[in-house]
Image (cartoon, rainbow, N blue to C red; front, side, top):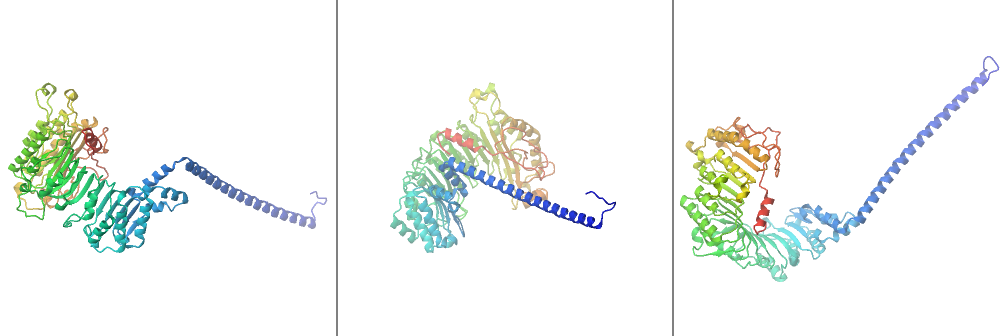
Length: 630
């Protein structure tokens, strides 16, 4: 604007002020519009990104649905089930995993309903929830949707319910029995109603046929029925039944089990042992616990041959309800009666102490069994108190042995002569010296004597000589053993457990802590360094010295923190506790294995202590190679 006058007039000034005001308003309007547009653009970009993300999800989903086979979806669903159970009714709760999957969407529902395996694994434990009116309907739905698929189930009725099941409970049992032709694996624990008239009536009415039943676990409670329940008799006659797991074998259970390949009995009276085994002529695996066996319960003239049995686990224990003055047997007559030509795995343990003459009689019976059967024994787990000489003689009869686990019990330990006999001679002497267990690869020792009961524990011979242990291991890992058809020792485990009970023990019978310290120090100084080298070279190791102490620990002079500790570290710097190995994971074969060393005070609170346990997968392969199956 040009001014003709030296100074603008008041009118001109007023016009200019109005123009400035209008310009400011226009400027603010433009700025507001810009902000609005920017906000709209940002909102549009955010919406665009969200739509793009959803479109990508849809593309991926449609691509997955189109490419992923239906069978793979079904397998994913099956693996997603908790412990592979489609239905779990436990006390007052119910988990219907398969039903939940079918309620996610129509696609998942179609997969779930079309996958019978999702609905064929049931766990039913009677409780408050079992009384709900809808529970039998849920079970019926599962049985319906499982179609013709084999059924695996656990049925547990606690004794607290007595024999008065509600209609829902009887309905559950009836619906399960109606599908008996599809039972594949059954666990039936119904102690209160096993021989109930109502159960017998249902069985007689339905006449169930267990056409494909393969494994049966049957529990009747501590008292058991006076005779074999009708339901058990029907199931035990299943033509395809190969495994039977019983809480107790009663006299009335004696019926032909020619189809059985495996039997487990948790409680077996001594007079029924041979009867039970003789009913299963094709038996391949047996795991039995015999209560209070007495020699006069087994006919000395009776003989039994099980030509297919390759795995025999036998534990003999005292029955606490019997007369304590009874003199239980150690199984000598049992082993004298048996012939097991295919045996490749034997586990045998005793609960009771035995006199020297009883131990010798048992040793003779085992010698006869080993010689008579001439079996290809691969694995031996022995928890029986034999002398070292008797044990060495038995082991000399088993040249095929690859896995050996021994426990030191009663008044017998592992003496110097025992480890000396296990030492492999030098190459120049092997040809003229008999080698004990030339195929041995896995060796486990447990020294777990009880200070309150055993006398030899207090003598220095109660603990194995560390130097002899090392010499024995080194001799079985020397190069060149394969040239003499001798296998290399791959795994070694030594577990020394002392249990100090709060019982009156004469002072002269208490093991001296100085002797333990001497033994631990000797092991640390003379054995651990060499073991470190062998461990780095591939030897699998587990070493443990563990006192489980209570008030008796104080009498031994153990510190307070030791007597209250589960792991038993302590005794100053002498390391009276577990051997701590840092960084040692199960199955590890190389790397730095020994961490702190045996003679130190024990691990710091922040450290982890790892132990190696035998490679049972490899051990199972050994049994398979011997002709059995695990």
